[in-house]
Amino acid sequence: MNIIIIEDEKPAARRLGRMLNELNIEAHTMLHSVQESIDWFRNNKHPDLIFLDIQLSDGLSFEIFDVVTIKSSIIFTTAYDEYALKAFKLNSIDYLLKPIDDEELRAAVAKYKEQIPSKKHLQIDFEDIKKLLINPIDRTYKKRFTAKVGQHLKIFSVEEIECFYSENKGTYLHTTDNRNYLIDTTLESLEEELNPQQFFRTSRKFYININAISDIISYTNSRLQVKLNHFNEQEIIVARERVKDFKMWLE
Image (spheres, rainbow, N blue to C red):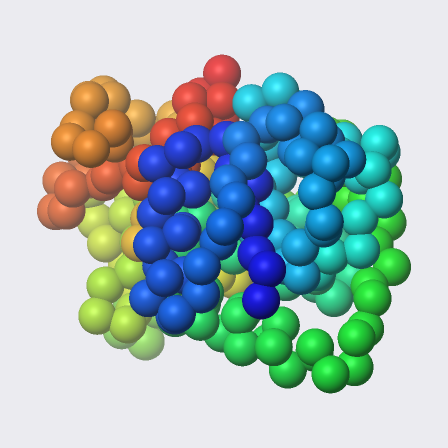
């Protein structure tokens, strides 16, 4: 199997390469920009499978396809965990949400291998997905959440919520009055319910409200630690693979 990785953050590319090695798969080539990828595709045999980051240092990776016709299978590696993933699903494109999880990577590779015998070539409308990434369609996001307290339902507006987090297979919200409430949902479900301008998924355990941030501190291994106004029960760490997107979100 001939595989390449296109990822502008070299530590993230090397990490993915190591994860593939653990599956006895070797990525022979790693590319880090739109222009480098275009040059490579013009001069090399195209691979069976591409692990493709969406946001590269010199533009969106879709720009590669504006210049070069590529028929390789694609697994996206992306930090866009809001509106875009729905488009990927509709186009039958597989994707891995950063930071990449071992089991999800294993499942994506297995899915690709199952499709090899059919030699199915996906017709991907990159322009439509690109429009979703650059100019997302108008959406209505949830403005309130409910939590059961005894025999009662308590209502919270999103302005009252500092963060959502997972713990012991449950999902909780933490309020501005420094209380935690168990809610009947998952962090994955929140992807389509929270306004991405207000909430950011720092890791697989946390969504934080931009209005609740009190401090941001440099942390080990090029990560960031986020302090909220009231929540202090766990450390909130921005995964290294998400730091760039986090900084863009802050602006």
